[in-house]
View 1 (cartoon, helix red, strand yellow):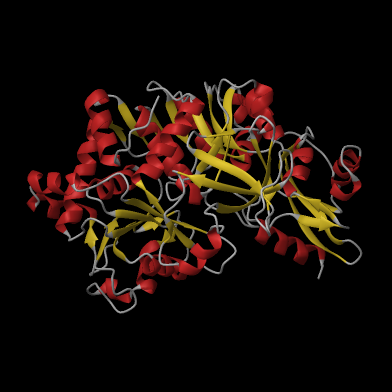
View 2 (tube, rainbow, N blue to C red):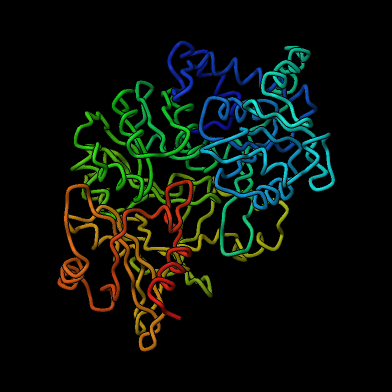
Length: 538
């Protein structure tokens, strides 16, 4: 199969024409077929035109996964506006930074989500929302649209917003849609890094749709599949590798406002989902939940970014025998390599995967950027069609993101074998040195996950007067299982080199209080800070 560049609107038109009456989106509040999804998206597109949004304008979206999130994203894409997803865990100051940094002209948001008062956050970011926009704090924010009953005086309700689109003719909408090109911006994805503030990754229609298509071919998605999405839509993985993948192949996407293991298991059973995706933590939470043994799931495959032991358990315990292993980052739209569902299980479990056609990966010295030979660990660097246009309004970050010869620096460690398969080893900034030996947290975590009682595992390095740093591990225990910290450490000592054996190990109920991202990742920085405090280290 070959790729022909197109826009999101063209994808929606193609699928709505071919599969209009087939289910496209199922949430806990809506059930839409492809034709209804197109109708709703067009209503939003007309409403955006009605409030003055034009091609190239930026529209913030702040809410949990639901039908209105999708129709807002699709509606903006239809007229060439650029969606700026806002993390639902951001506080007022972080929200203000993103809206200002991305020059957002409009914001569509829920009044409340998970007992969080988003109206108050917006009020703190721009007080003029209580009177009349634009204000002085966010001078480019001209419009706010609120989903829910708490509507500030300077904002529109969702229904009033849609009503404004009634004055926009079909011809005006068609003219705006025709003006959109595949290489226009589709998304500004804010991603956290080593800097003090998130950086806005600029991704085009072609970046994201082609990435969704290429990854979909690898996992073998089919129109009859029902794909359960665990990831938030404000994360590029939730958009490209879930929502847009389902759209490109005409499959049904099933999702919830946020991830919670019990609710996810129930919905996957109820909707007879055949595909899903996520990271280590998400799958460990699913398989470790007390409800898991009682659910009748029909999962066939999907993709995961996880350690080999987690992948093995997904195949053998979860029953998703065609699961594929993925590696990527927001700056690459996001997928760089994906194993193929037809690869032997041993290859997929090992985490070794090939790049998509047209993308190139090299392993280089992280300081000199000199390319390294096969089977040598170094920084993963990437170039090709999926790479971002750059960070919006951030020339300093752009200068650091690319090498002099044009390769994207990922900040990740990996190696490429003689079969041109990439394996990720860990994050450059997460790797720590124990008495001169480099230790990647993922290596120790994979050993821990082989223990029959351990459900999830996280490892960080903490200060040590003699060795510089030593490993500390935090683990959760599977429902119904028992193990002590001393027993686990004794078990690890027989299976790992001395420098990889955790100096400290703690059993915890969950990582929520320590620090989790909304995309289901444990925040290593916060975990390390927690460990240093808890252990009384300097």
